[in-house]
Length: 450
Image 1 (tube, rainbow, N blue to C red):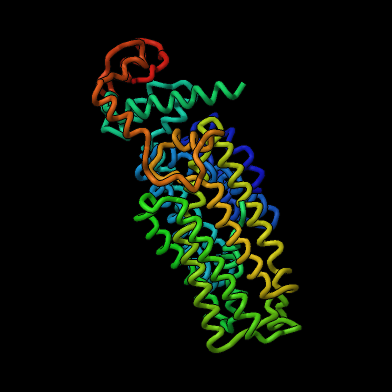
Image 2: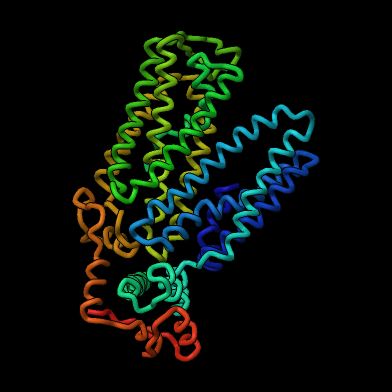
């Protein structure tokens, strides 16, 4: 369901705008969740889940796009990480809310758990009208006056003639014109832990309520790890986190698989009839498996979990960003589907060897990141687009920062400049002046300020 609606997420965002498409998605979430909480049969429940898929398809791909397009280059990574952090809080809360609701008698148990999903959607919808639209989307659809006004609010407190605003607006329009002129990955296996950690902990001899609570601890680790990422993602850059994170996860996979393979007791009939748990360890080996499962989750939450969405939101051009991010999200959900579908048979047939396979994939992902992924931290979205040009630098030679925008700002400070060139030559000073000028003269192409 989510895959179906991710296909339309890009066109929806390009038509309605980033902000309005998110609001549109929330409306579907309210409807779908209401049907689930009040369902009287399987058909009604499936219908509600189907409608929820519309929201997830739109919001999971377009929220990162929106955050990337309204953020300053120095803090873009941290801003997008907040979204991942919020998702992990939601998973953590709903895991234990569901656990708590399991003690409620009767249908109120599942109705309460599903009804709780309404709360975050209501808060998000209440806040959306107070958020600015993406200036890059506004520029894309020809609403230059509004785009400059919002860009000035974000970058310079409303001063449309601030050198930073002038330089970034010039960069946006130049790259957008170039796009229009030309218009005529590997998986780490981390979701094994989030989807089937209960099975893995049963392999480590943790069962019953102790196993369930221990499984829930990983969600707390996710929250802590992603929160820590907020403070260094824009300083260390994306490449080191992608490369070393994948390596760390690969090591954890090898340790878990190696311990289960070396010290595990084979259970031909499964554990209590569960054929997905055909090997079990006890004592020190069990503690090792549990510890490295948590270490894997920590490594993932500090690196690939937030960075993957940050990077995916950064590397697309303005013309393709909404659709491209939807495609990236489709790939993610396809793999999630594969995890849910193939991992249980994998545990049944090759048991601990599955961890070795994903360990190899993690190291392959690190190699791919080193060879193929240029550094994007500290650069504008327009500069990032140039990194992928045919004559762009080798990815391993790119570093955080070194933004050309800083040189443009200095040039404007030395030579002066006004944003009036974009609005029929009228001289404007503030975002309010832009709104007035918008009614006085049609927009004209912005000349590059030398």
